[in-house]
Image (cartoon, rainbow, N blue to C red):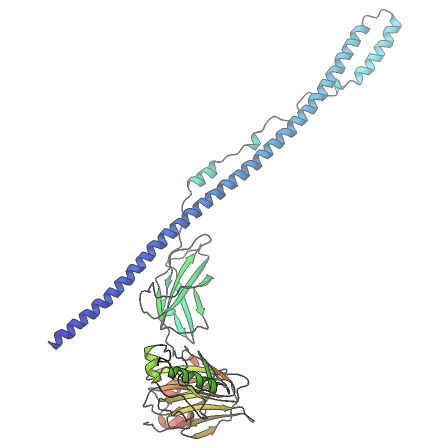
Length: 500
């Protein structure tokens, strides 16, 4: 009976998952149909626009050529009319001379005839009819302005849709996720010299598989990528995965997107638990600031809440609520706030940056049982780096109410590396990635990030991966046995396991 129930439960779970996949795929198909309708309408509009542009070009060329023909016709007719006028004038002059010569032939007196003959001879010598060209100065041929569209007609008749670029293939083996950067590499299935650039798109997701149409964020676009590799830098890994895809583009159009590839973007994501913070601390998202007047106002607000409907403070998620554990606020001189997500295994990294005028602050980790009057590093269940800028500047490592002053430059940005399973807690100068101090112990309870601040503010950077330089250092450290811990670049404080 029990086995059958378990089998049936597995079947129900499998069917529920399959149903969810099918529903999601149906949403994808519906969205694809809508995209086809929209894209086809866009293509129709672009086609009309191209042909209208072609007609416009032809109309402009026709008008220009017609103007050229008209201009040459006008010039030729003008020249021929000028020649015609000259010929008409010469004809009138020759007719007049002919009439005069005929009249002179009828003169009987020899003296008068001789005189008249000499005069008509002089006039005939100067007559335009004997100097005029009796050949048209302008040809009537206009064939040099004829247009032959045979070649262009063949080209237009051969007009086809442009060849679409092939679909790129993402080279998963060459993709790299490190230092909150994602390097994406791809290749073309065959060489295509017409490819002008690529478009890379990415989006964060919590799903390792098909994208959820209703739940997913829009694609972020990186356009005009000229190379076959691109690195997205300075990312905040607040989701479990990142999905990427690429499309190739020529001068006129883009091809289809590549199959999307989902890359794991593992990072430690947490916020500040404002329900744990000292009343003199003002917490806003991942920023905490000491407020000497905040206690009274917040005490009043807290009293009103308690007298109200009894509604609990707003929680970010069920898992984070469990991590908070509904603990008391810190009080007294413990100006502390904890993270809202516990570390129970694995390797994690985060950073804290102090304001320039911050007088005193601590960055570290603690078990949940840190008392409301306790300070980081003053119990056997908490570890921290403490920086004091009051009167004189000091940097020290603290645990179990013991303090070790470090002769190192003061930094305003501290990186924390926690290897829970390996029992390693390391603090870095996050500006130079120089190791400040390292604790070696065995963690027996879940850890919470802890921060103390007095007279100033701290910005906490989460969603960060373990930096490559830290991983490289860990490999070198892990190669040493427990008897050679002194080979660390800075002193290591071995700590006995705590059972608090």
